[in-house]
Length: 97
Image (tube, rainbow, N blue to C red; front, top):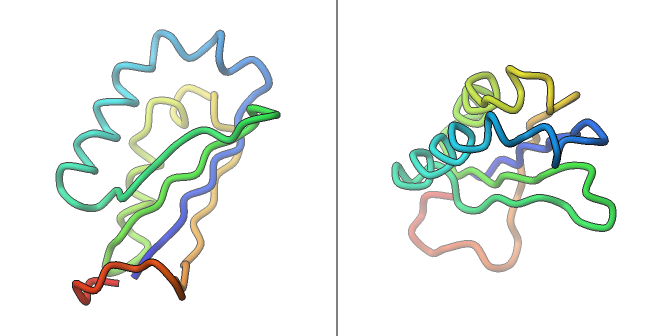
């Protein structure tokens, strides 16, 4: 099953993120290496959030990611939510989704 983790961020997060960016990127890379995180990136024009796509058995994985993320813990993310995503086109045929 796929899950999307949506982040809403503070208006000045680009200038405030520097002290937490390395930890945030480490967490992203670790989740990707475990096969949990499929892809992730910031929204643009305006840069007011981010979307992270997970492949997991349940929503615990993306929720746990958000709770551990330095951006969330340090107030750069003002709101986050996890939604299940039923992929119709483009899902891998591995049977994991």
